[in-house]
Amino acid sequence: MAVRLFVFDAYGTLFDVGGAARQAAAEPGAEAWADRWVALAAQWRRKQLEYSWIRAVAGAHADFWQVTQVALDWTLEAEGLADPQLRQRLLDLYYELPVFPEVPEMLRQMKELGFTLAILSNDSPPMLQAAVVSAGITPFVDAVLSIEEVEVFKPDPAVYAMVGACFGVAPPEIGFVSSNGWDACSAAAFGFHAIWVNREGAPMDRLQGRPAHELSDLHALPILVAGMGDGNGRSR
Image (cartoon, rainbow, N blue to C red; front, side):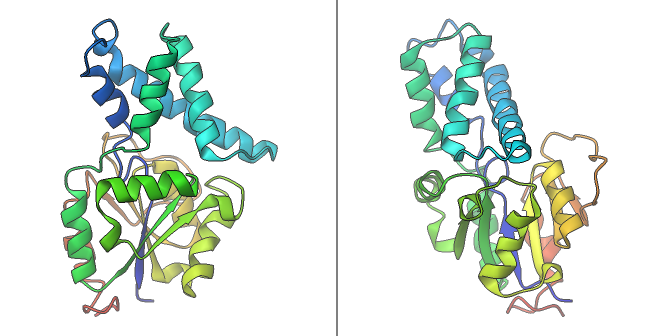
């Protein structure tokens, strides 16, 4: 069955989740902690994901912006950086995260190949819209889907089912791209044509599905998928 559209995870796949800590560390006044920004960003992201999984399993949903804030609070305390001004600066910057350098050109090429493009993310609609607009990628994105429609975080199958409901296509017709191994594996198990963007060179997760392809970044994605379409999102 032909792949007709591609859906991207947002944070870590299109948007650089380390961007907020990296920029804050480069600003005046950050000298005391600037050499720890990488660890801070990694801890923040890890707690963000952990809290989303726990809430999904517990049936205790909260929107991702709340999860992002409490994950940051934990991280700042763990790093000995419980500074209200730093907290606010990091949250402000998170609303304007940069995309990875290859993203705009990759999206442009994907559109030229004729594919419909969408984002499917754990994040709340205001966060997603702010990020898309700030990054200047609005012209390339046909739809932005938030899990707030079903109020459960990935990898719950209800999240992946949103794509078919929105576009009226079956799972095998959907290409799914994520930098999170667990997300790519779960999407593959759901039936998507999953592509894992393994930016960190990590081992494949031992889960219930396996992505069809693995890339180190998004540069080569248009080349990879060109054989799946004829310029109208249909396979050759």
